[in-house]
Every structure is written in structure tokens, then in C-alpha cells.
Image (cartoon, rainbow, N blue to C red; front, top):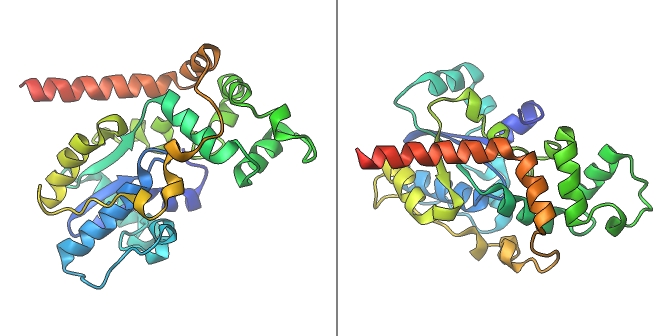
Length: 250
């Protein structure tokens, strides 16, 4: 689903007190959620000397309180997945807005991510980025090539990235309704007044996709290509929203 054991251990964040498993989904408030969860666990266990001072600390697992499956032990991890009392959750986002944000942040200039795309497509390093990796061209590419679509976690099919089809108990929050959904999910874990919401943009202003000026809005053609490439994500989101609405109406 996520490309190997190392990526599994980077993706999954586990706490034992209080117990939960979080599946991170890049470009879906993941920095804010990682920081929030670490700081909220620190508060819950009374670890007053734990601080997140910069953006690097958010993503450096050695600096985190939350455990990887390897650190916890795979058998204990599987037991937590099977335990109905352990919340499992992830946040997702509209495929179009996530794709646009991923392209702006990771692919609109030369980066380690464009090098991955070059290697996958067999593009010579001397070929200018604008000749093969425009926003519209990339949308065409992911619609035609599922391996390209799933090449990296930042634009991978979300339902794969969060193991949606493998985890029937997984609860979803939505970036588009982040405040309400973080209160719904994190309030249930920590208590409604006992989690610490940390806006990661404060630590790294460049992490806000709105600050990325390169690129443009999606064309109708690109939007249609993205809809085809990520149709399974749209189905997942529609189904999850429907279940939440039905639950709230009971």
C-alpha cells in the first residue's frame, strides 16, 4: 500500500496512553496533526519537558513521542488494530485540491520528487521541467499510469495511503471541515478540552499551500483527469460523509 516497511513505519503513529493509531496522509493537514497529537499526548501523560520547536521536529520520528509499528512491535500493533476500543483515524481531502497542492509544493520546481518522476518516466536530467511536468501534463500522467499516481505518498491514492480498505474501523476526518472533525475525533480521544491544537504553519509558514505562488488553478481538462485517476478516493469520501451524516441524524 505505501511502498515498503520503512514507509509503513513513517506513516503510522501510535500512542498507548491514551491509545490510538493515526495514519498520516500528506497534504492533508498532516504536519498540524502530527504536532497536535505529540503535544496532546505529552499533556496527557504529564511530560512537561516535551516541546516542538521547529518543523523538522514534527516529521523526525526520533523526536516524537508517538511510536512506529516497529518500535511498538508488530504483534502488538496488529492487536491494537483488532481492538475495538482503540481509535484508528486519518484525515482526507478532495482529490483535486490535494493534487493541486501536492504539485505546487513538490513538483513545480526541481526537487527530490521531480527526480523520482523523471526516473519513473525515463526523462533525461537535462530536459527542462516545463517540457514534461506541467500541472496539466502530470494530471494526464496519473490518469494514464496508476504506478505514477502511487509513486509517492504526497499524491498517492489516499485510500491506499491510509489503508482504508484494510481497516473497516477507520474513522475519517476531512481537511475541508478540519476544526469540526478534529474536535470530533481528538475530543473523543483526549477529552474536548484536553488536546492541544498546534498549527504547523506557525513553525513553517512555507508549508501552507496558499503561500505557494507557482502553478495555477486546475483547468477543466486537468480536473477531469484527476477525477478519473482518483475516482476511488471520491467514492471513499462520499461514503464516509454519508455514514457520518446518517450517524448524526440518529
